[in-house]
Length: 226
Image 1 (cartoon, rainbow, N blue to C red):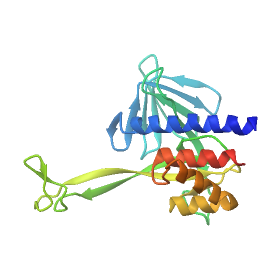
Image 2 (cartoon, one colour):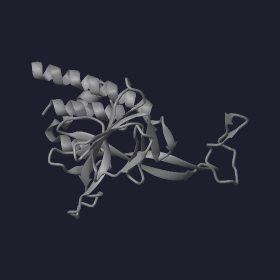
Image 3 (cartoon, rainbow, N blue to C red):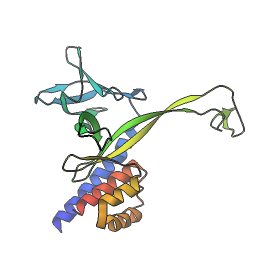
Image 4 (cartoon, rainbow, N blue to C red):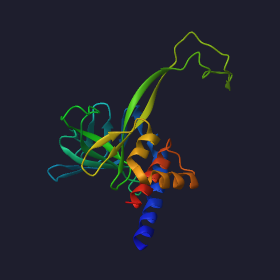
């Protein structure tokens, strides 16, 4: 009973952290695939630690650390155990961890060291990456006339917008990484016989599989059942 209560308290804490993280994710972007933070720490595979402002180039999977002498050090996942970043010293900490990944090629034994953001901790861990989509928003009712939404307005000029699309993965205790292509269905398969109980919990607390904070809470709850 005490263990269950402790795990539920952890669940609430992780869920609140996830909500806060949602607010932070849209900040500090120099470009859709480039983010920077004024407070950061990188832990290398050697055990050495580097501290300073961090810039993360997501497409290249490279992290730059500005060291105390002003020099920049560029690091790839093959050198890094994990790095953590904050908006300020007392702000929420985000963790990016290096995992060996098959690049979604289940037929291959090759594993490439890759940065993933770790969203929770437990037997079933939610980790994420991003992809980027260019979309032409003209002639689709997204333009405005006179500051008001006008679905009838059309323009001959393209209006390209690059959108950030999160991609969710599950990390299993044995190191296997599974992409969630259909988030709810894939997780229900993972939950197995406990799927019904998890879905009842999600319904009771109005948690959505399509929203990050809900997804974190759902997975954290499942972990308390193990």
